[in-house]
Amino acid sequence: MITQRSLGVFVSAMWIAWVLYWWILARDVKVTRRTEPVASRLAHILPLALAIWLIGASRFPAGLLAQRFVPQTTLVMAIGSLMVAAGLGFTVWARGYLGRNWSGVVTIKEGHDLVRGGPYRFVRHPIYSGLLVALAGSALARGEWRAIVGFAIAFAALWRKLKLEERWLEETFGDVYARYRAEVAALIPFVL
Image 1: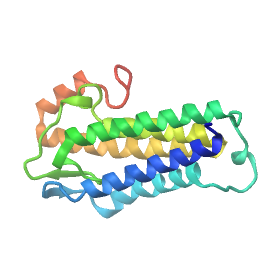
Image 2 (image 1 turned 135 degrees about the horizontal axis):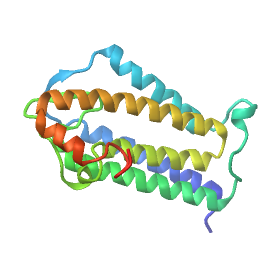
Image 3 (image 1 turned 90 degrees about the horizontal axis):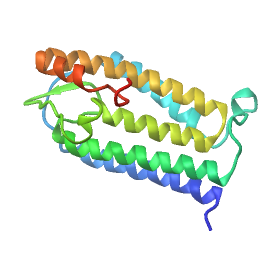
């Protein structure tokens, strides 16, 4: 029988498996030609760390942020779990298409390719799209207001990082990237 506890374990296991997968693949990437400065990295890494803590911490001090915004039911946990699975699955698909061009920080690689296949046909930043869906699912599964705050912080941090990437990709690929931007939404097909 599926329980809230088993779904919570499933969500945690998906995130752990995803981190391990990402860590293993991070070893096979192209040589970096240009990378963002440490201060720039910290401007999105630290807010993301705070967001992950807000969403993922098993205990949180009492108060408004610890109150629930949805009921604590198996159905809510199941929907959140499915969102995590779908979001992380989308990131894995995107990572496969990005191949050796991937980096955890904003970079331009030697022989950098502009990838437009697979999920990159639908959104320019499918890894961020998938992460946001997975984080929204985790926030729903957590069910507390702190998770909503964490999601908003994660969105802002990824949006900041996306904007920097966009600028660098346009500098690197010029009109080709400008056309791609005009044709394909950044995070949500046909919307954003």
